[in-house]
Image (cartoon, protein in one colour):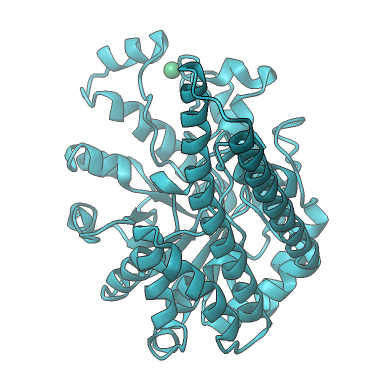
Length: 439
Ligand SMILES: [Zn+2]
């Protein structure tokens, strides 16, 4: 079974556009959806936190539409780490693990009841759900507050920091299973971090708990056998999009790595969740809209469809040009993308997005040259090398560049409006920041 994960804390479409996406995802071949709601729903449990875009009535309609299409919908919430959107608020600061914004202290007396209340809310919104994903990845700050440290040193089982993780995660998995009749799922990376040493404590989890092994880079199946050898049901997870160092201020990401990662996972016999991250976390940059991901979406939902897709050569050439920052190749591809065939309206939108992205990449290269010149001229001026005519020409160049950026931003805004996307101002401002220059 191929499940598509949608991380709603990133750029998302309006409710009306969401329906078209769901229809397209179905056509793409996915069997289920893993909806990571994060900060986008006005949860009663977390009053005044987040930036809600979808009321509960909207979620009910979207889930209803998805189920009518035949999708299984699995809600996903984080119950331990990746909680910046909640913990950054002063009213919830008391729940932080040793003051960290992203992690809950599992020993804070309110932590367990609040998470149960949230599970209740999520379960009520998904009356037909069979599974619930409770996150539990990357809890980097385990055991750092005084209470947690004390608990670790007094643990009769001597499980170290993982004892705290296991007790908290297992208690919530039991709550979901016993009180809500939802089969719990969690990510398995915390067990991989200690090379499986804490897997011997798995018996405290409900036996039906599903462990999901995510791996977005090469050697996809390294560590997979750790969790599989326990006999627990194991799923795999690829990334249609995930974070990488160069992406913070860019508009296009390298797709070849994603396509390889998806194809690697598809060689296994596991149920797969293809993750589509919207931003690294709530305090970091937004990635692009879903339109940027049409090729990996097709590859994940319909591998044979991608194997014969007419865009394959273009995607490879674009990756190469982006990696080498080759201006002539990018200029060629800016023309070529508009001539690509489009099988449906989503592919047409993707072509427009790639065109915008290539233009941005070309401006990015130009900005770097301008920045270097700008700095050199300032230094030269300090050494008495001044030329008024040269300065005038330089100012004209800067002005022309600014006009080009303004034109691009107007096209970007049009794209946002036509496709009814969220977070335009933040996206535009962060891409503009990538130009280095004070425009
Ligand atoms: Zn603590």
